[in-house]
Length: 322
Image 1 (cartoon, rainbow, N blue to C red):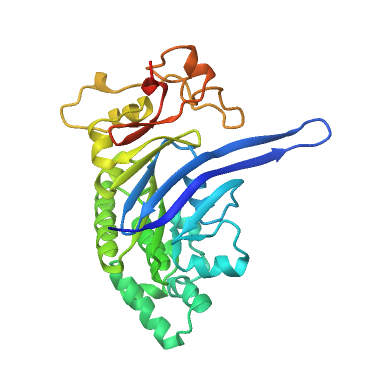
Image 2 (cartoon, rainbow, N blue to C red):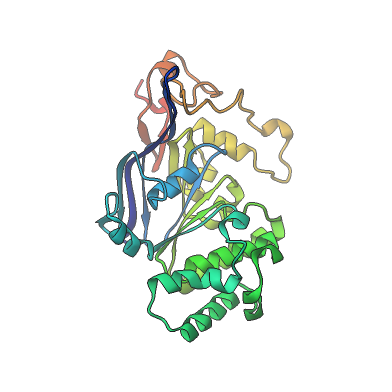
């Protein structure tokens, strides 16, 4: 049986802004009381609309954002309050692939230096050994060694994403958190990147946390899926089961939007209104302002619990005892 590599317990991240003589500060509830686990060798997807807190969750797990509360455990070690030196040691095993490859790669550095930088900081390799490692990684991701002397702007979006993957792999991490790894590329390149992720997982024995809004990416890449809405987990379960029989109304709406041959436009569930302001989230269930299955005042007044529904977990009053 696989062991738990990553465990997140009641993690919250709130951002405070504003404040002054005439106006008090405001608090944005980006992530609220999130708990999840990732088993070694597993691929877990975190999905939801833009602004639901997915990226903030990933960065808070790595402490690129300091959590407001909660705990993060990696390989049975609590990393929530590690000092900078302890965190530096752990980050060799936890790497992130950032959403915007154009912004995450230093435009003033050649690709060789971008990929080599983690090795310079964290390894005792000689210059020649590092150069050889960079060439190996470029070949692994489908680029040529001569590409190492080019700058990021000389590559396509898909190629830049591959360079970001190579940089994340330099230290042989155990966990990769990939934030929208397929964004900004066309469907054919997406298929190539999915194939690359699968091959790298087998070769490097990787564990993935994939953050995305693309339900098709979740379907083809993950073992389990976590659905987020307004900073909270509203459903989680095995990917196959969630796609076959979603329990939460929000998950049903997301899945209904996937283009499928033969699907009629009337089969799509259209949600009313916009996502509420995270600075002023609604009382009760966070989804009740848009929910097509709202069942009464309880949705507006009482925050639902996480209910186990045939092995899936849904945060919805539909599953309250009568």
